[in-house]
Image (cartoon, rainbow, N blue to C red; front, side, top):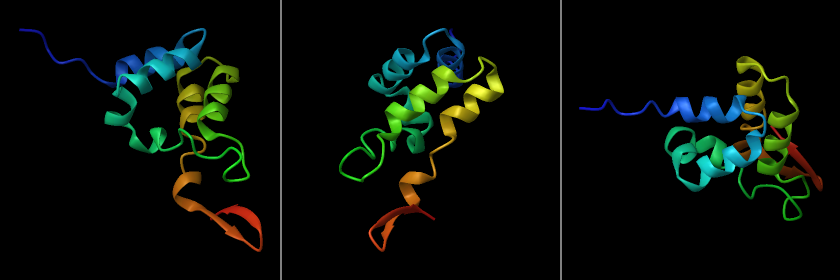
Length: 98
């Protein structure tokens, strides 16, 4: 009998590969990211013109790809903006995240 696959392994592999963006998109499309980290998938489609701020999923994938290819740094890059979705607001016409 095969043991169930650890869902962190494909995410870790994606983060440490040469081109993590397409790999992260594949994990998004297959539901792996949603199952393990719904706070990460909440960034998909958030931002852009509708919010007056950059698209967080695109930005996050870019930061991951440009980060030093070490496990700790790439995982930190994946989560660096997850707090923006639940804390987004507008105050006096300006976007804030607190």
